[in-house]
Every structure is written in structure tokens, then in C-alpha cells.
Image 1 (cartoon, rainbow, N blue to C red):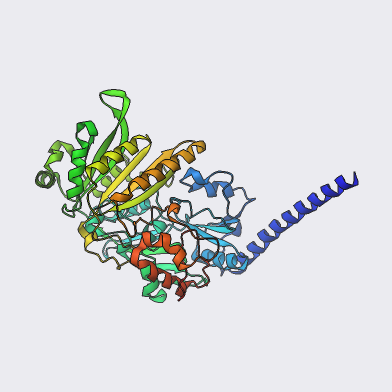
Image 2: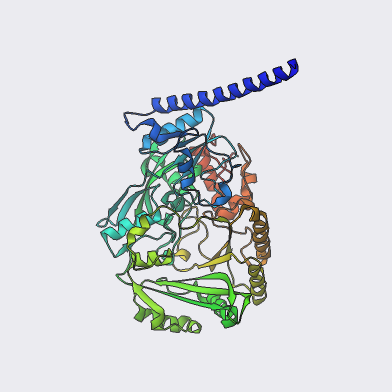
Length: 528
């Protein structure tokens, strides 16, 4: 009996000690945070959310886009910081360092592997959702946009001021500006204007020492690194100054979808040869899906959809297509003219008759379990390769491939201009995606997409097999907790950044030598 009582007493003391440690950490962190604020009156309770606060769970879940990272076993942040002012970011960095916690930075929550809001180490989440002001200057053709803004909010603000200006970024309106730009950022007009990162002319970042830097004070090396090298390795970028681009009053969209039985393979073979050679005003990407065969509803087949945006009117597009891609048999009645902001709605899956205000909704239209991968293609995939690919896709009915043509402006920019190296020589990029509804299905879908990726190896880029950083893929390799050597990180780093990886590591060493800003695929420090 005495032994039993002593065990119970020991357990109680352990629980009390644990509770005391948590309470002590909460109090100490809050005290540290308060003492590092300079004359800013926002109540701390609205900025710092501890695990025991009522708003913690809803704020954490608000921008979790991939349900793989919403289960109960996922490590949650010790605190969520929701900055209303840059001083809140400064205080968060200083106090996280003081109490030996890592930082995760979330602008929109679309990181494919959840690295903007989960961690294997004790961490603080800086959620930038409140820092989303946008100032558009049409006369100077630029805009300042805070990192917590979404692409949809940015597009809306530009369209409010003008119908002949746009921005070359992605189609998903709930994607956060911060992560999108810092990883490159492409969209339907990138063959004409390059990446979102290519438009950046200034930025504001809080560095590892809590200093606020702009382009002049950070220097050109760091300014180079954050435009495609992933900002979370270097600090907290909270604002970007970007150059706007001119768009015509009318643009034209069309969509032609065919199944394999209807000749989709022949059309895709032609697209492979000419998609990257088309005029830069014309964007045609190909999207695969598994559908019912028209002749037999019990049989599945592959459908390939050719979705296009042309920066001009239909009367110019139709003869252009007749000259370059007659096999698609495009007619005037297949085309729809609209404003550029309506094309944003169109590619986001909204009706073009809806108000652009729908772009202000920060809630994702669909949340699911998913896994994605990417590849770059330098020469057309052979007929044998394609037939095998179609068979693999039929194994997973919720699979999708998005094949994006390169060429145009992308072939004119040097690979070293920014950290994003996938320019000249690529004919298109592949995004592989599979989704599912139940957590129990996770293992089978991960096995499938990994087998598909393995199958594609002979048909895509090599040495390295390149990948797009914004389509984060931890299968490529991951850093260990703490410090990872440059050689170890090169396993994944060369795939994303190729010859730019070493320069990124040198910038990292200069700006964050203690490797405070780190995650499973952050840029490592580089020592000779």
C-alpha cells in the first residue's frame, strides 16, 4: 500500500512540475514579449496566443490547407504570434531565441509539406494574416503588399485601380503572397512577364537580430536570395514592393478537353513539341484527369484538358492557333473574351459573372489530404513513356497532372538572375497531385505517387532531377534537427536551386550564421 501511495505521489509531483514548467514558460515568454515592444498599445492577449487560450485552435486551423497535418499527433506551436505591427515580429524573434524555440512563418498556409506551421522541434508560429495591407500606385506601376495578403486580395486591389494592369502570379487566390513570391511564383502570364519574384524591387525583412532591413540595408546578396530562395531561411519578410505589368483591356480564354479515345494523346504529343514555342502572349497548359469513358461508364479513361489564356482578342487568337496548333481545331465559338480580372476568376474556378470581391475570401474552397511532386521536362516524352504514364494515372482516380509550358520570357532570364534556376532549356513543368478524403488512405496514396515519380525518372530532367521549391517535397531529402551540412542538404537543395544552391548557403552563413531560421528544407550554413 505504501508503495502504491508513493507511486501516486510521484506521478502527482511530476504533473505539477510539468504544469509549473508550462505556466512558467507562458509567463516568461509573455513578459519577454511585452518588454521588447516599443510604444505599441495593442493588447498582448490579441497578439500572443498560448495553447490554453480560446482562440488558439481556430487560428492554428484557419490556414491549414493539407489535412495530413491536422491530426492530433502533429506537434503544435507553443505560441501563435499574430502580428499587427512589425515590432511584434521583432519581439517574437528575440523571445523565441531567448527561450530556445524555433520559428515557423505562415502567410497563407499552402506549404505542401506543412513546414509553415508544423515542426519536429519546439516552436513559435508567426501567423502573418493581420499584416496584409496593399498599396497600389498605378502611376508608378508598382505596389507595396504585406506578406499576409493573399494573391486574391492583391489581384482585387489592382483591379480596383485599373483594368489594364495585372500581376504575374498564381491562380489560387488563397495563397499567401509571402511564401509565393519568396519561392518564385508563376501563373498564367509568366511566359510574358516572368515570375512573381522577378517583379520584386524592394522588400522589408526582420533579421535574426531583430533588425528591420530594406533592400538598401540588407544588401544585394540577401535581396537576391529572398527572391526565389525561400524567405523563411533568412528571416521574416513582411512586405514586398513589386512591379505591376500591363495587360490588355480584353483577354481571351478557351478550354478544349478530349479523352484518349477522342485523340487526346495525339494532341498532347503536338503540345509537347510546340507549347513552349508559342508567342509569349499565349499560355496553354495541359491538365490530366481520370474520367468515365463515354462508351462504358464502368470503364475509366484519361482526359486531357488544354486550358488557355491569350493576352489579346479572339480574332487574333484563332488564326494564331490555326497556324501553330491546327490539330486542336479551335473555333471562335470556343473562345470567351473578358477582362484580365475576370480571367483570374476563371482560372480560380469561379464564374466570370461573379463579383471580384469573391477573391477577398481567405478561406480555401476545398481542404483535403494530398501529396504533390514536381518535375521539369527538357524533351518530349516518348509514346512508350506516355502510354505507361496513362496506365499509372488510371491506378489513382483522384490523380491529376498539371503540365505548364515554359519558353517566352522564362527563356530570356539567366538561371542565376534569382535563386529560381529553371529557365532556358525546359519545355514544361509537371505537377503531380493526388488527393484523398480519409486519413486511413494516406499510406496507399503516398506509395502510389512515389511509384509514379519513380516511373517518370527516364523522361524528365537529370543531374539533378529538378524540382520546384514552391511544390515542397520532403521525399527529396530533409535536414536533421539542428545543423545539417551543406553536403547533406545538397541532396535536396540542388534539385530546387541547381548551381544557385551554394550562393544561397553563403548568403545564409552571412545573415544567419547560427542557423536560427531553420526547418526540414531550409538553406544550410556553408563553411569551407
